[in-house]
Length: 374
Ligand code: ASP
Image 1 (cartoon, rainbow, N blue to C red):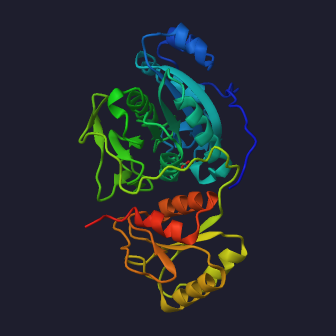
Image 2 (image 1 turned 135 degrees about the vertical axis):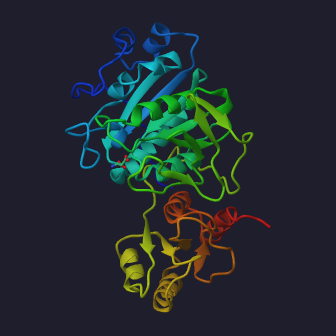
Image 3 (image 1 turned 90 degrees about the horizontal axis):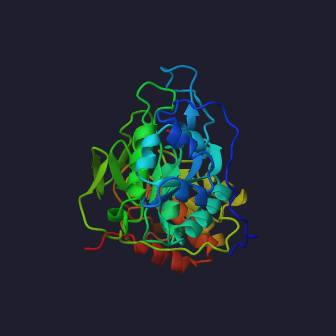
């Protein structure tokens, strides 16, 4: 296991450009100016629940140069500006905010992930905190959400939210998404449902939700397992009572200072077999391939992967490049079947298993937990 030196969470008092959305109720916003938890609780409304927002960046925190620009904008808004833009939030919850990073989600790395896991675990351990919200770019949001599902040990809601349009755009979706995320995090009914992704009125499980469209607002899609719920008039409605996905595992990363290096290789016709050895040579401790069909791979790539596995014992997980479906548990020889985990989620699971020093058989058992059972 990798160890780390405990660091205290730092409040973000970012000096950022003026808010994109002028505060609609200046008085409420003024009382909220400092993200110091105790001040917010007492100054706003002690009868409201407390929700903590961890901001990481993404389109929800981005600004374009005009109201019609919906590509090519820049990240830059801080957590305070995100909240200032939605004063309605203060009718629902007292808010504390932490600025964890301010990056596009393709740049979210293990430092950010571990910081989130450590701080969220600490926050949810407080009796007076109802839930947390993570604001995040949508491109890799599902990876962070799944990571938090595995790394946060609490029945309180963890909601990961983003936006497809920057804050400056006509019909920007970030403010309503954020309001819904805070509503969900503050909701009693959201307990025991794990980490959830909410966007565009839908509520999905971090286990099953994936980004389905690079551009459109209705991008998050829950595969075969379906959505957990939806919002009507900003009230969350769930289809089911709380339940845990099969395969749910918890990893205690309290002492972890880094995550294992796992790469994803994308299979295609005539895949270059050299990629397996190249990844290993570059330091990969585990590999996932996004297989054709249900974990398929070309004969020569298979030979290379098998050779690498026999020579090094490095775990190689077979996932699927199709958006939906699963890789069945039939004996795959050198490869471990990913079950329903898509490549990016299989990578997170393998990363955490390797970080916690699971051996090959334990990793195989871990992935086997995720197969739908007859
Ligand atoms: N560029 C963005 C990201 O950080 C995309 C988004 O947030 O929608 O993932």
